[in-house]
Amino acid sequence: MTIKPVLGVQADDEWSPLRAVIVGRAGRACFPSAPAKMIEATMPSAHAHRFQPKAPFPEKLIAKAEAELDYFAAILKAEGIEVYRPPAGIDWLAEEGYTGAMPRDGLMSVGNTLIEACFAWPCRSREIEIAYTSILDAVSKDTRVQIVRRPASSFANTLLDEEDSCTRQWAINNSRPAFDTADFMRLGHTILGQYSHVTNQAGVDYIQQHLPKGYQVEMIEVNDPSAMHIDATILPLRDGLLVYNPMKITEAALRQHAVLASWDLQPYPFIPQAPTEPPLYMTSPWLCLNALVLDGKRMVVEASDLQSAQWYESLGMECIMCPFKHVNSIGGSFHCATVDLVRDNS
Image (cartoon, rainbow, N blue to C red; front, side, top):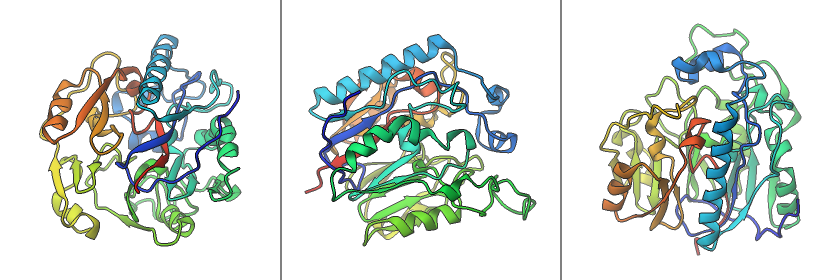
């Protein structure tokens, strides 16, 4: 696979005009295998029994998800955005992994820096290495770009050790840095994050240590006992406007952060309903907040979600509709399936 020259990395918010982006590929995706404690804490109870070693998703489901990812990439290219993709056909069953469809879980751009997650789930430990090394190698040829790769210490299999297990809120302990980059959202030089069943204090400290000068992580207070990833909880649409999931966070909790003190904060006004087909094996219907904003005026929304699209349009956004139900089924939506490389905030 030939990788095109990358423009570089420069992105520090979620809404400035998107110029270059990574879009994932599903490959031969599998239900992620993780210790039962991790699965029970985060996954829908109706499907928790499916998360076993060597359990691929149905082939027809993956074929449709792959087609949706290709269509999504084509939409972004048609909008003039440079799109970079991992190799096709990765056999995640053979790798005892999950998928390459959700790169936002494992990579975060902050300024000119790309930070790789120290995944809590063992089955994801080589995900970025397997799917995204060729892109990261191309990016790193720009000497201005800093690539922060996962340290060898993140292999430590101590996160479920029992110290303080009776009192701690989350499935994982703080024995080594653990975080999914999807637990963080960039609002300029302030990055809002959440603690979760995959992100601990050591992980937050690790991110702060590797941020470019002048950037700061602030942790928001969420009411979500199954917390795992922040991008179905808050969604900045443009500078000064953010929508949020009122079932998981309050306006008061958001306004505790100076970056949001004067923003228009809009609660999502509906209770989203889960589809019956295909099932949401790994997620909730709050994926309606997991959209990709292209430039503070336009955003990509699931093609069947007319309710959300009409509401976003009432807030001044133009919605580009894209089928994504089968990608939703395997673990995420448009924000999850992408990594911003360049956003033009000049």
